[in-house]
Image (cartoon, rainbow, N blue to C red):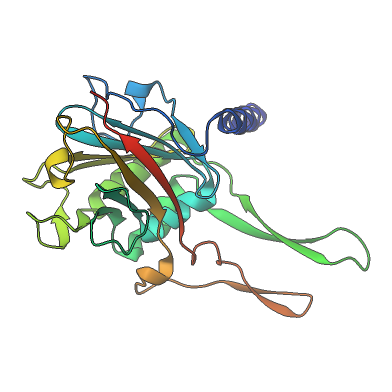
Length: 276
């Protein structure tokens, strides 16, 4: 049974790599959202297919719209990237005039998930996204090599438990730059109709969906123009919380920070035109 499971996981990893290689780094086309779109952390409306795979962030994503909302659908399959997101969240920026800087006064941004760190290790482990550190040598007198390997994948029931705990823990969305809403945290059950959905599927992939009413972005299908957007995977250094630790190891006598990837910000910028 375990051999079959490992074989299936290997096939899924290879399939994801092949798909990623065929997709553009940044989404090219405008896209109308399906009429049945549901913000639930599942990409079933898209048949789990995406418009781009960004190598810098290691994120599959699709931007779409209808007459009232803009939608971002994001999926991450790499365990370490999922761990980073659970630690510090994903920020999505929309800039109606096409500026591509996180310092622009015209940005509106939405950050999720945000939660107490105490639940993060459990979510990451149950989702099967926990990694273990391996120090190994390639031979006598050779330099030791560090790498991070996936722990044994969790069961479907644990992945469901991870989704449940995530949704119980991440109760707010951080919003900035919206004239009608003060900067700060709003409930995921807000009256402004800003919607989020997040879940782990049975392969351990993490899918996040965001729906934002166009009126909050300065955009309208009646005034079609190109604008810019960003998807940013935040650094833990931006959201330091009690309980977070940085792991170090000594390799060839040198002290190495094993969590440099968690402590750095990665992002992508793209351009989009609303689809009529």
